[in-house]
Image 1 (cartoon, rainbow, N blue to C red):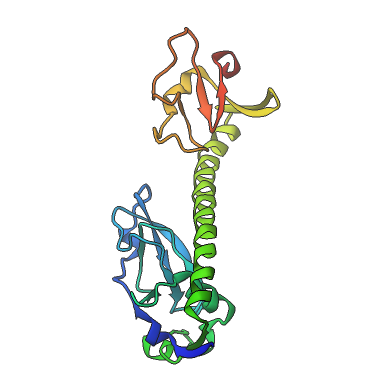
Image 2 (cartoon, rainbow, N blue to C red; image 1 turned 90 degrees about the horizontal axis):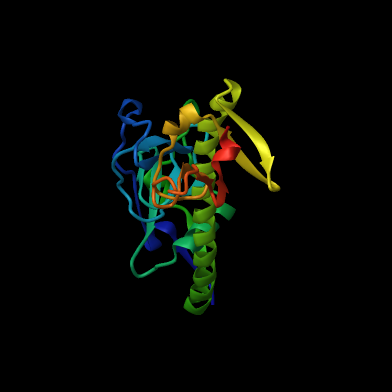
Length: 231
């Protein structure tokens, strides 16, 4: 039998410490979340796990997002963290997504969502058996979502790095064996970076070194490009 409970009964709600725009670091190690998603990077994180973040200021007040692990969440978002005796983060996330709490926002010039207002939010909770079944499936989906998000970020970084090179003639794109290969002039080979090996990064071979067969080989994702393709 389903029960009606308040969000305050099932979770802790709080606004983390806010950092200003001047504190953001362009090449920081961790993403920073504001009221409307990722706003930059920082060299520290204040949440090691994915968290439910509810925008609590501005035009996006009440919007729901699930952050990436190891992120800094600012005070422009309200973290909704399930209590230890209700370990169903995915259920809360999708419920909030379906029944948006933006109707609890107050203020006309600058809409805001306070913790006090959010405690008025109520939801229907199914049996533990149903919750466990839902959470088990949703957690598997979440892993795929996180992987896709991280890959999209890496590809966006690659795009932002590569497009200026294409525009000023430092790089050209050609069709190589039915796949995209990136042909980079010899005098620009020093620009390779990122030894992580994630797809989307242009880098030397997986050991971080040039092959010793007399040719230069570089990799984009899983596509290796020989020296002759880089002239």
